[in-house]
Structures are given as C-alpha cells and as structure tokens.
Image (cartoon, helix red, strand yellow):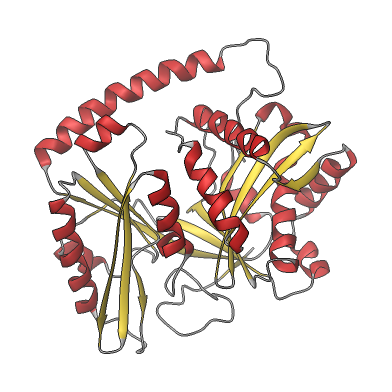
Length: 365
C-alpha cells in the first residue's frame, strides 16, 4: 500500500481525477435528486467569486418522520467542494458559502449541522472555526484508498494482496456468482441484507425508497450500479456503486455474516473494480471511510479489508459540527438516547439464536 500526498487544490488530475476537492457524487445534483425522492430535506448552494466556485449539498434525514421534523439535524458528506482557478483557496468564498447556508438552516429551524469535509485536518480549520464550527476530528481523521484504473486488469490483479486473491479464488470455487440486479424482488433482497447489516452495526437504515430511487432514476443513466453475490440461488451480499465523472465509489456494501466463510465481499469488490474499468469506463476507484490506523470494530478490521485491493492511501476527511440551538440539541440528545436504547434492545433480540431461513442474517464487509 503506497501513501500518496494530499493534493491540496492543485489541478493534478492524473491520480485524483474527479476527486473530492474537484467534485464528487455526494455533492452532486444526482445525489440531491435521490435524497428528494426519498423524502429528505435538501439544501444545495453555489457561490462564485473571481472565476472560482464553491458549492455545498446539505440534507436532513427523515427516517423517523415525527422526530426528524421536530429536530432536523443536517449533514454534509464530502463537502464543500471548490473549483479554483488559482493554486490556493480564497477563504472568502467559503465564508460567503457558509453565511448563505447558515441563513437557510436557521430558516429551516435546524438543530445541528455535521460536516464531513473532503480535506484532512487541519486544512481550512481556521475557516471552520471562525464560522462557528467545532472540530470533531480525532487524531488524523479518516483516509481513502485511490486505485488507478488506467492500468490493465492483470496489473490491477497483481496489486491485490495475496490473501485477498486467495479469498476471491475460493469464492469462485465455492460457486459464488456476482450479478447485477434485474428486478424489484432482487432490489428488495439487497435492502433486506442492508437492513440486517445496519441491525448488526447499530445504524439507522435508510428507507427502501432511497434504493428504489438509485435503481430507477440513476442506474439507467449510468450514475449507479447494484450488484448481488449469489450462492446456490441465495443472495448473500451486495454492493451499490456510484459514478461521478471518471470516479467510481462504493456507497453501500452489505452482507450476511453466516456466509463470510465463502468470502463474497472480496469477490464483490474485485468484480466492482473490474466492472468500473471495463464497462463504466472509470479511471479511478475510490474507497472512503478508512480509519486512520488499523483497528478492529465489532471484530472487523475495515482498514485491512479496504487496503487489500491495492492503490494509494491518502489522508482525506475531517469532521465539524455547528449547533444552532443548544437547548433543542440537548433535547434531541435525550430523545436520541431513548431511541438508541430501543434500537439496542431490538438488536439484541435480532442477534438471539434462532432458526434462520435464507433471507435472514446480519453482517458487513
């Protein structure tokens, strides 16, 4: 695993084509369309200054409609993004963008805004601070893996670590097959596996209508692609890829952990890498959300898994929060705590031993 230097706001596109600082799927109009079809609140803003442009897409989930309507908590994934004509960033353009965003959020009676910024800490830290944000970044934040797909498939295969190649071969030998989703029944299989993954990890799952929007609206336009891994006609794992410019990014990966011995996740990711290169024509495959260092989360080493496909490791994300209503924030924390207790109780019941059929299970990559 090579370590690449963070590119800043340079115009170098050789390795970081369509990278987060130049634009990404999660700050695009395509993603906003999916969020709107899901029924979530969205705010998309752009500011131009001296030929440069800054934009930001914020959204508020509405999974628990009554709770989220009273306590809208907004998020930004991989934003803001800036297109600069100069090598250095003019901080005033972000100040103007934040000013407009904060005005809209106050009108929406937002409680908080959580930003996952597409640059590592402490890049632009002072800009966030003077706009009222508190850094939530621990240590060095998160990293990403960038795989250059301009090489041929044989070269990419050699870049995969030996144990991962062995697992991919074993999955194929055991009869695991990867296929694109063809109908709504298979899409529901994907969402069921995803829900089980969320239950295992303690996450609030996104509703089925979001996946329906990805499949019906974006996949026909080449902006997303669903894959399922099958074993003996049983769907056991899935991956949702997104596409923006020359970049391919897995957005959601899920699996049933009672089939992990078949290694469907390694095969799924390798299939996605090849499909992105050969069919989608992507030049970059990007894996987000690696911890800054190797560690096990619920018994899973995500760092080792996401770095086993080769590529270059870059330090990328930093995290910030702005609170608009401290009183309502405390109330929302109390309510969220009660909801979390209920979910933990449900999760414990979900994890109790029982007779399972082919549609049940829980796990993650």
